[in-house]
Image (cartoon, rainbow, N blue to C red):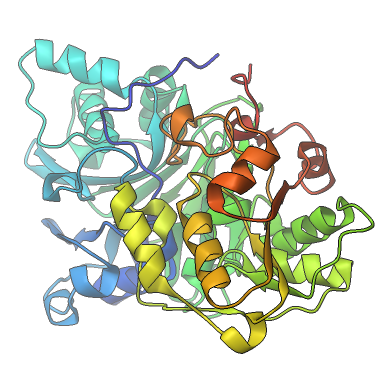
Length: 461
């Protein structure tokens, strides 16, 4: 069904948040939501809020750096949308920061997007042939331009049904969760396959949508609902309504959201992320040979913590935090350049020698993509005195690219592609390596509504 996308464009795995805050300016609340979604994108952050005029405030960097409180206090308006961005290809540039905003028929409209839409490249080319100029290389600007050119009327007159029809007609292949901010209204849409999560919260403060429910933790007793694939939300001052814009039921929820991207405290795809990772670790331990023993289980912090705990509980091997993580550095997997990832790992972790010295260590991580983190950490543990280091991954081998918003641009970058376990272990310097058997995924992710293409050598049909 899906053909390979070119990788010279920017595609994203990001975090989105927005809605309506009753009787107050929403800017500070938007920043609070983004801080809870910081793990989903660390290149840049931005918000759009206001009354008749939408004020867009966005910058490169982490949320606290990009969005200064003294500037936020100047921004007025109860409606707004916000975005944290992680670019998977291309340079990190100011013109690619979201929200994307335009003025049409004298009215402002803003958009934020999490995902990757296949048709964007072709639609961009068609626009450019007709003389249209783009200010960025992101899919998001293409989506907004296509909606504007299709509806051909002031944004205040747009309806949920019309926007949904446009998305379904022109962007039916690929993944997206989209927030659109028109005068006194916020629309949210989750694609008809449901690759990326989208959550709705109703509280006494107002109505909000976000990539993960962790973004709602500052709200008072929110009533939280997960938006289904092909559904969306229309938020006004009076109410919020969940609506359908697609009849497609072939949901393809991304397992990598649970394995790596999402916050452990989040509940997405009707599952808690932390307990899912515990279970994956337990299944990995149960797949081990009976004669394999080690002295200590150590997680690669932070996303490896829960799976390591599950592995230790199932294997009866003592669990220790043998690596201290600097919380102020970015997640190495979602940095843009390989050398940056390598330097980041060296600066990010510090071994606790008393836990490691003369021990046979099982090193648990959630997944191995390029192998940069694993290679550096194995070397670090051995320099700290580990007798042996046995690498374990609580996901199967990642051997295929992803076209739906995860940074896996080429098979050649994948350390597990076309290699045996022995070859992988040798490349990262480990004494052994083992991955969660692919068949074990079905014990956690039941049914056929999951996308696990990155673990398969062929594209799913």
